[in-house]
Amino acid sequence: MQESNSDPRYHTATWQKLRKMCLRMRPICEHCKKTASTVAHHDEPVEDGGEFFDLDNLMGLCRGCHEKEHGRK
Image (cartoon, rainbow, N blue to C red; front, side, top):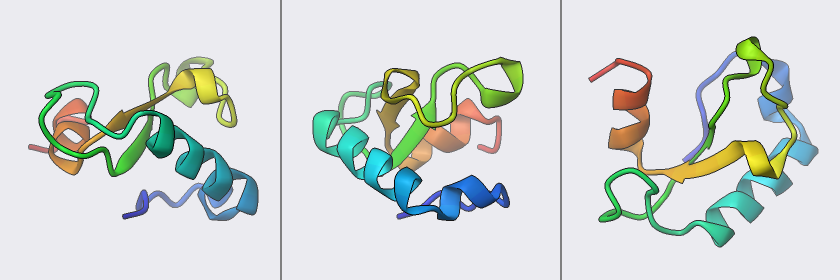
């Protein structure tokens, strides 16, 4: 699954490689620790100064935990 964000950086080869690497390194959701990670989530939001293309600013989350993190569930 891919992030459904309108930011054009999510559609670059650089992001796709970084996302794959993050999910490979963190295969289990870092919040619930029960489900496979499917989303590379920015730990420090980019709008708050977090680096977009920084592997150290990414965490692997399952879709449900990612939705909760953004207050959508």
